[in-house]
Figure (cartoon, rainbow, N blue to C red):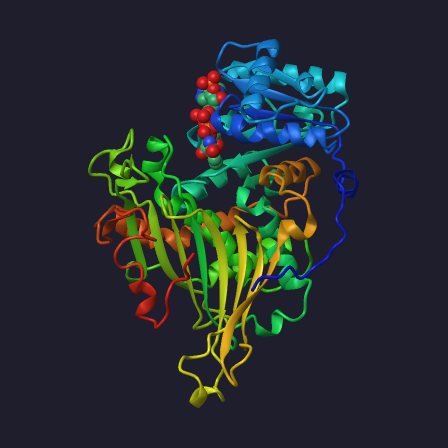
Length: 509
Ligand SMILES: NC(=O)c1ccc[n+]([C@@H]2O[C@H](COP(=O)([O-])OP(=O)(O)OC[C@H]3O[C@@H](n4cnc5c(N)ncnc54)[C@H](OP(=O)(O)O)[C@@H]3O)[C@@H](O)[C@H]2O)c1
């Protein structure tokens, strides 16, 4: 049984736009702006924001890359790329806001040229701020930061406008490298001018976790170890590594998904109510959850790597057959883990996390499984056990919230069924989900850091993973087993056992 529970007022796009704060005039400088991320995510998002009239009244997008281009060829290139991305009509006036500065980010002289160009544009367009978007390889971040500081691009004296930086993951590859990159960043900018993007946090339904928990009263009394049996968090992708071999093989699922997205989701579900709905109180509450998680250990971790499979008459290569991956790679593309949050609210409640590539379906879901009733008064009359209640937060696809509960089956004297009440986010509000990057870019323009990752969260997340990353690297004590041979497995052999040994099972999709 499925039912939408709300009938909210459906807002039109112009009405929604009016609810947004309009940022002050500023420039977005995309360092590495001719790459995959910029073309697939940033330009379609900026075009959307421009079309919705959400960008500042005056703004410039300054794109930096080494290739030989000028403003004209840049605009043509991005126009074609937007058309390929399915944007049929490029919003009027958008392409004219794009400017190209050619240069090598490791070359000191380049920064002087960039500064001059930014000063010219600031004067002509009356801009009051600069956002530097690091959309290039993270290996370049330290050099960019140092050279930006040498050129005075990190302060008001250098540019006579405020500077901020937006940084893309990965934020280091382990605790040590994360501390080192955070030190580099803080040597040129204070933390409140740094916007670390985890695009998951820009998704409407991820933001809705906090609204659901802290704008309603009836979840909170049950949101603890007295009532919750366990929590499952699943982030499954159906695609493989899609040509990102060299990057992925250095990273693997623990660094690529657990260190950021999964621990972000866990901290939002488990955190205490923050004192206020503001960036620092929210970050403090999330970090306290990570601090309460004991180091991960190998016994509570299952790793896997997708194998080649014949699916719908087509052969899909296994991970070790992908371009750029060695035939003996041990990089995991799947992980499932049991974590504890050892604080007063959650002591004894396991959090089971799983994520993988080439799984049967793309799905992201948080399932809060409540405890069984203490005593079933129906026991003598029923063949089977009563099902425990679950609350599911679906983050993708079909975003929404569902609650399952027991009800009487019509007819026979006592027969029960488990039913689900379903709230479908987009059916209810009648508006399609904007790209997560739209929210995040707009917030960075406005200066709202609520949905960005603070440096201490990054470091604490690496601390949680450190023991298993080390075990995987050095002693190879954690086996990496193949999965997906039939195209239908939700992980390798042993993944079920992680829950079965606790008397539980994974949710099915
Ligand atoms: N792609 C994604 O979906 C995705 C998702 C999440 C995070 N990220 C992160 O986003 C960042 C960018 O990823 P990407 O996939 O877009 O990379 P990419 O496709 O390799 O693009 C890199 C860009 O940097 C420029 N570049 C490289 N070296 C340069 C240098 N020395 N000086 C000036 N420009 C230079 C390149 O253009 P030229 O060759 O013309 O210089 C290109 O525009 C990375 O940190 C990545 O981890 C990417």
